[in-house]
Image 1 (tube, rainbow, N blue to C red):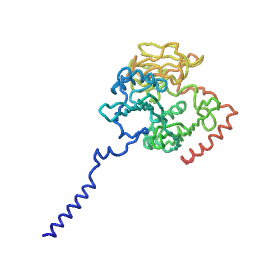
Image 2 (image 1 turned 180 degrees about the vertical axis):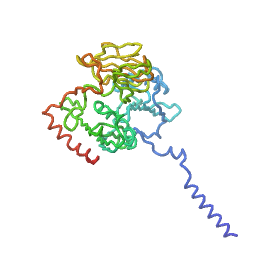
Image 3 (image 1 turned 60 degrees about the horizontal axis):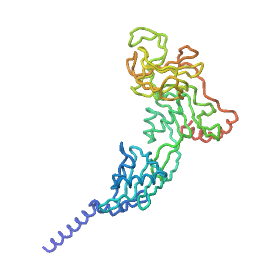
Image 4 (image 1 turned 120 degrees about the vertical axis):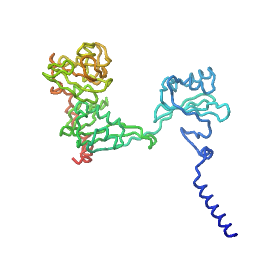
Length: 405
């Protein structure tokens, strides 16, 4: 009987030990662990963490921390030379480190305008402000492959920040319609990414080189500053030809052509055959419409057929017009730069759905913009070509290597 009793005690002891091993850590135990951020051990304070809400001001935030109006005013006066209190933005994080007694008096406030830096406002004794910038490291990355869907989907598959797609769309705006990339088309991109404290990802930094297979041709893009002192970057192909043209290929970032320039087209609203002297690009209502080249707003207005429209005069030879807008965002006589948003897609006037009809004039005559050979931007100066070739040689070699060209 004693042996059975001893055996039961041993089993109970073993079971109790295993149970203790599997028990979760309690909140009391967690609180004893060191929680260090911004150079502080949070266990030493009563911590309040939140984000800036609509209507919040620096004054209102610290006023809620058991401080009187005069104290708030004095604090703002003391910090204004080091920290512009008007720059706090909705959605940005802040932290108050307060005393652990019943008064919860604020000791420090930390405001994070971005992931790479933060401000510390010290409320003890004489109020002071310090800005801390975290060390940032730039890492190079190369990706390549064949398209199986859209380019954005391919970036997602390779776990790349979508911001890279936006950069590339801007670079290739004059030479590639990304809607016309096909399954199996190759691409390669060399770019850099930012990391804070070597571990926190902070997005795409810059584009070093790229190529896309488009309509059977490899189109390269290399950044280069012709004037080294100015540092102004333009993009060129492997032969030093500028990618940037006088005109963008489309007034929309993502272009979907639904009707082309035609001498005779059946009008879907008027139900008659007539000339269609423009190119229709379908897009959701509200999509930004860009001017395809720099110029001066020649006309804005409304007609029964065109709806809300804008016409831009680019020089003595070329003008463009944008029809059926839901909103006009410019005024007559205003100067606009290439790519400026001048309105929003709509379906005003004679339209069956939201789109922009893009019209193009050359020497006062409406022409088909898609068939017109348009002028390029400034060519690379011959004296810069040797420096350019030397700079791009290792980049092109790397791109061609990853793509097996």
